[in-house]
Image (tube, rainbow, N blue to C red; front, side):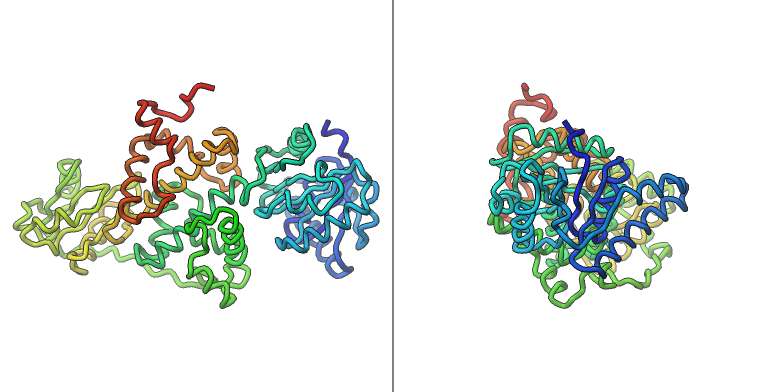
Length: 490
């Protein structure tokens, strides 16, 4: 059925729209690119020529192939030129009033059989469709930036979408060389609905002083294996875009966790929007502070907790003297949970830090209210000597990595539990849309359902945030002794 789409209109030729036009042209379709005025049209032409020019320079296109792609795209400032298009997709700014006005015009101009698609990343497709006389022929087709590179397309159906249309559009996405994920019309769809609460949560933890910006970024990049830390990613997406998506999520869910973090609002109000403005959570020309490689001044260390013997052996091999807690200048408590209760039972509670080893590279260094700054400094230096990246943080439930990771996994379980999308589609969306090494359900299987469930219980007990309570399905899976959500009968 995807073969019925041969002429495609793309309205809005910014970076995203020009990329979408290139994707269709690469697949052999005729493309009509539309912009509001001649200047914007020329900028759009420049985006397309620049992108294909870079592909040519990198050996990914020949001169002939580039000429063919560019030859398939025509440019106009008139919507009337879309009268015979089989499909029109818009990539204009994420403002509902703009999109609804555009779809009213497209409904008037385009032939009755034409499909009208929106590339919105979070707005209601249903609300957009309602402005037309053909809501059954309106659908979401959400590409990811840069469109020529990113493989994921979210195909968003509404309650009024014609039967079979979502399948036709998914087939079209495959024809374009993309991987489609078909979902219902909920704010944020799959990727942004899972990604933005995680990013917003990171901003809240930063604002609350749990850990520093660079430490949180390092923890999630090196500890969780994500391609970027949350603040680097927020700067890349754009803080204004992220703020608006959070607002859309909050308006639909009324979940306080979706309300934009105050620091996010403040940065946006100040015009610090991330890479697009040159400064956001990070500065464009920010100097990198060199890590100190000096050997810590403590010569004697005591190690407590599960795995203490093995860790003490590593310390001994690095030249540290292992002693009892009474004589130690530094006491390390290996733990996944807060350690202040251990501290109060020691002769020198100010000498204790909690230590959570995450993967092969990161160590979270948790300071209690009793830990002295000198003790924390010594622990950080010790970990650098062992080849770990230290992440100093407060002594709070699940510290940094798990405090950010577990609610994200819980959100994925709730998404599946609601019947909104399949396990496979959710995993695929997060891997292809965000570049994650594993989808949330693959991560759940690796960590263990009970471990994540218990971690969420600890987060809920500490923060009293309702969305941190384990999803009922997760609780039931653990109670039933199941090891994976995939064990559920189909």
